[in-house]
Length: 223
Image (cartoon, rainbow, N blue to C red; front, side):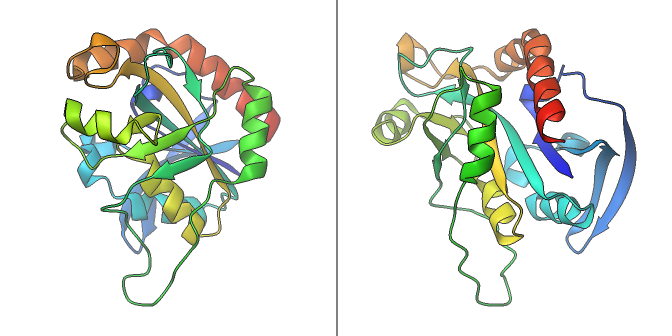
């Protein structure tokens, strides 16, 4: 079963017919949309990024039998030549703080990874997708110019959620990969100031048809 987690980038995408169900997990209830795929909206109940119950979301995926997971994320570019409108399929991620875990009460050191086979399948479906490293900040605030300048030395796009989801998928033995839409320049890149959330949502809405086409291809090939 293919699972998809999405947020801002999927606001206007048209998903295949799905039934909304409530899933009970050890970490709290989750609203999931189930059919040919399983889709979970990460911002359900209008939850801000720093308060998303990632453990419940990933546990629900496991309970529903998901064995392959695609994580969609809206990101900001940290390089002038990585233009808004690009697609990135990260091959690594960096997040040195606030990563959730399922191992609060036992010792578990799961090696972090992005599933290479699933990532390659995404690259074949979306040949224009670029390779790079995803950097996760905690949110909800955007980053300062100094922060972006520092982390841009080793990473390429910045978001607030995908690293947490990838880490938990690893702990649950669910092969997972991420697909990032580049919706804006990060603070100080390309002469920009701090991003405006309303502008990012507007860009996501404009990209609805494109994201729908991408999801359609993914479902056809992987579901």
